[in-house]
Image (cartoon, rainbow, N blue to C red; front, side):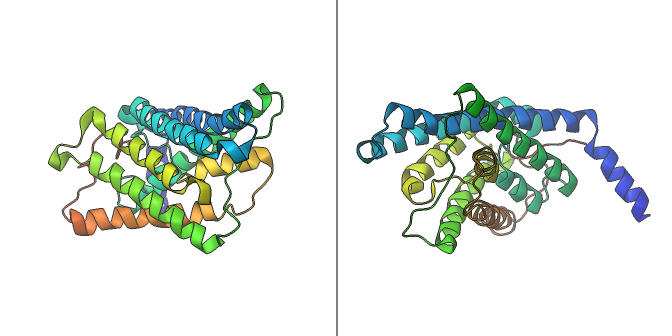
Length: 255
């Protein structure tokens, strides 16, 4: 019976709808990471004197995060749910809105897209340094993880609220709400931890740059924050939550 159940789950993970959702996640994550990491590279290129351009660079990256995430969610919403982020996928899996096997496939698509985006940036900019996320010297890894966890909690909670059918969701405004939250979080914490909130984005840039320092910060914190957001929303804020009560970019049916 267990073998039959596993076979059935594997078959559901490779249906045409499921494969389309993985492709949609790859495309959206690719362009999101390309824009965000590209904005970091552009800010350094335009303003090499970091001491006098920190504020301008922070605003530039925050705006890129907000616009790119809103657009990436919008273009993938009807196909994959527009997660664009392993932490969001994890939060949806914890809430039972996507199966574990589908979540793993989402992760693979998101990670590969991030690596490809960063690799393309490195190649097309003639080998310029691909920036990685890092924490300020005054912070500990634990403190940075907590900070990233709080940021991701806010992001994933916004995803849940903006996609809930029971109070109408926000329709086309939903992706904007999520993007605005991401941009605001970058403005608030960029100088401390980079405001990643996205393990795929941090991992892709680390792979291409060849530096994995403090990489755990951008996995442990966001995954815990996303899980807490999903559990809190489903069990305390709206305890009658059902797997299909979320709209497009929050939950999908890939069976």
